[in-house]
Image (tube, rainbow, N blue to C red; front, side):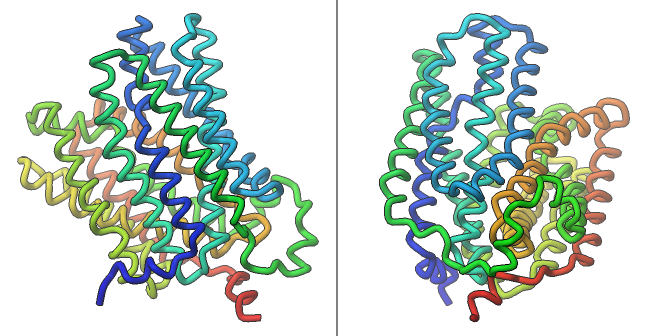
Length: 403
C-alpha cells in the first residue's frame, strides 16, 4: 500500500494552502537572525535583544484567540491574506527603525499581524478537509512548514554575509508573494463545506469567555501543556546540553537537528496516513510517551550516537502528537467557532514557546541536566496518561456530513 496515496483525495484548497505556506516559510529568516541583527547591527545589549524577542512572544500570545474569533466571523482566507501582505510590508519598514522603543513597538505590531496567520490557517484546514482526512492534512501542513524552514534560515545565513538588511526584504517579499498567491486562488474557495445546524447558528453571539465553560477543551489543553513544555526544550536546554555536557561543537547541533527535519519531511505525512484510523486518544498518548522517552532518555546519553537515537524517538512522537492534537481540537470545537478554538490552541504553543525554554534553562542551571531530563520524562508521561482520559466531542461535522 502506498502511504502517500491518501493525499490525492485532499481538496484543492488544502494544496493551495500547502504552497502558500511553503512560499511563506521558505522566506522565513528574520526571526531566526533577529537577536544577532539587534546585537551586531543595532548594537543593543543581549538583554535588550531578548526583550525584543519577548515582545514578539507577547504579540503572538495575545493574538491567537482574538484573531480566531475574527476569522470565524469574516473568513479564514481573508485573515491569512491580510496577515501575509501586511506582515511583509512591516518587514520592509524594520531596517529603517533607529529608536529602540520604536523597535519594541514595531516588533509587537509585526508579531500580532504575522501570527494572525496561524489560527486562521488551522481552522481553515478544519473547515475544508473532511474529518477523516484531517490528520494527514495537518501533517501535510507541517511538511510545508518544515520544507520552508529548511530553506529560509540557510538562505538568510548567506544573505547576511552580503548585507544584513537583505533578510528583511527577502522575508517580506516572500510573504507578500504568498499573500498574492493565496488572494488569487481564494476566488475559487468555498470555505464552508459542512452545513451548520440551526442550534449552532443561534450561539454565534457567545462571549469570549464561554470557551472556558467547555470542560473537554480545557482538560485537553491542560493535558497537552506538560508535553509541550518538554518539546520546547529543543530551543534552549538541548543545545546547552549538547555543547556543555556532551562536549560537541555548537556547529554540530545544527547537523543533529537536521536529523529531525529530514525524518519529518519524508516520514510524517505517510506515517499519519498509515495511522489515520487510530482514535485520537491512542495517537495523543503514543506521541506524548515517545516525547517523554526521547527527551527523558537524554539523562542517560553520553555520546552522539545515543543522542541521535533520542532525537529519532522524540521526532516520531512529534510527528504523531501535533497532527493528532490539531485534529482533536477541530473535532471537539463547534463548527461556527473553530477559529476561536484554534486560536486558544495556538496560544498554548506560544505560551510553551515563551515559558518552556526559560523554565528548562533555570532547572538546568540550578539542578543540572539529569534532573531536567528526568522531569521531561515525568511531564511527558503525565500528558500521556491524561490523554487516555480525553472525551470525544459530539463530532458535529460527522453528524452533519451524514445528513
